[in-house]
Image (cartoon, rainbow, N blue to C red; front, side, top):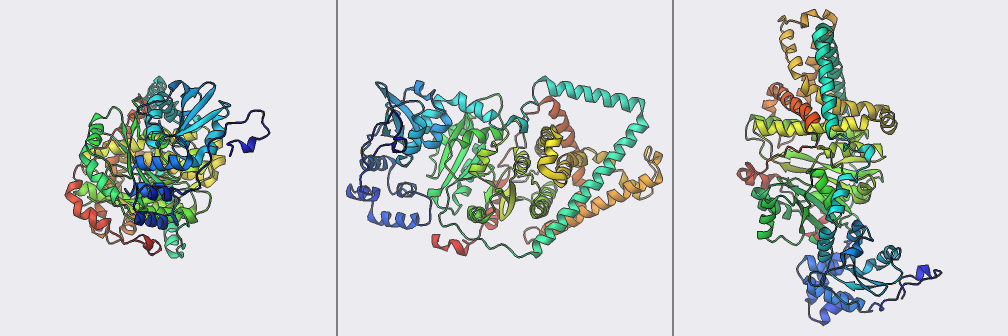
Length: 640
């Protein structure tokens, strides 16, 4: 057999490699007594419904070692094996081929023999694809076998600069916030501050009136938006659920978990991820950590990982953000579906089943699915309870309403899953945006794709301390403004991509949210006006305008109460209902985060104000176990 039979008309023919043995891999392993017959039978049964090879299944379940599997593959393909640690590849050859292609097809140019290349591969079934790529650089080549782990290790070391730079810029420039750096934001911020100060000084009444008008418009828009989402949510509850069935061949799923100084929670995180029911041969859990994070690196070095886990080290760079780390790590993933978790997450064990079923039957334009987020430590104090109510409103009502209306959804930063091919097509994450999730939701919609909600929940640790809560919220709001400015930089294109309704929703989601938090000190006095208390400046407004302000404010608060009541109707949330009236004191705290976000938007736009995890999750282990206990769906009982 020739690797280039399809190119038989070419002047140069690639060399033939030895014919593949007719003997099956399992038979070779049995003949050499490298595996038990019962393990082969079990692997064959699993292979009937999995997009996995027999060797991958055996290795994932510990039935065969990596070394023995490579030996059997060598005998089957009649290709020699090499150890890249003992005999490393020639790094000069890697310059000829994009490292990301080497990782995608799991190969690396190893050595030269005269004018020929020797290519080290880990997957014999990809020889044709590798040949098609390599023949553009070399007319003659042959193959040897090695392990995927060795290939990834070599490419990561030899091409770290290239892969690191690619992670920073893979998002298309027109959708990226990477131009919002250097002195430009600071100079622009100073100019805006100067202009606003001058206007306020010389025309205080006009400035105050304009500001209140903007607040009124924002109140009306935000409230209308929530009413629309609530109406769509009730419509969703009334409609008949879509019947979903598992795919004939289950896909491989890779989960990215970015880490930064998470050694305290790492062991508990691994234990929670091990509870995921998805077959280990189809599940790849990637612990992604920064090279500068010696704390996490040392912990991983001391504790061997289970088979379905792998550690990916991200090279040091001036830019240190979660989306950059995920962009880098994605090249080292093999999954057809890519998920994202945070370090403190506790997902329901059957979550990936729900995701796989949903995507298997979803329309082609569904690029991702979002699971609900909730808190396992909501009962810690008042702040954590209010935080839980806010999340319930967002993930159990608002996002479901947007899903029904097929409007752009600001994705959550965790428990969101993507079709790998579409994620690559749209440019992955923007490494320079500190709310990469919400930004990606908008970009997907602009490029003709959308997200749907999945009936599965991941439980997180709520920020129950004021300082960390403000820092986390300020990062979210800063990213919202970065997303708003980036996409609105070309307003005509944004309007064309999203349509009139989508364009309005986009502005309400991002600019409206920031306005709601930033203007809280201006809106709060309206409570006093409702009781007939006179206030300076407010008395300067016309009675009609003032009445509209008060009415809009009262309507906003009533709608928020209704949203909270609806969102907390579930058994796990009813204990929060008694705290709904106190939310009037919770929302204004966000103004502190809004001011910090505005300041950092112009002074430290790419600064990632990290949230500390694992503060009190150990106190809620029994609650986590209770919340994440769910039986296997009937359609997946064959795995039980």
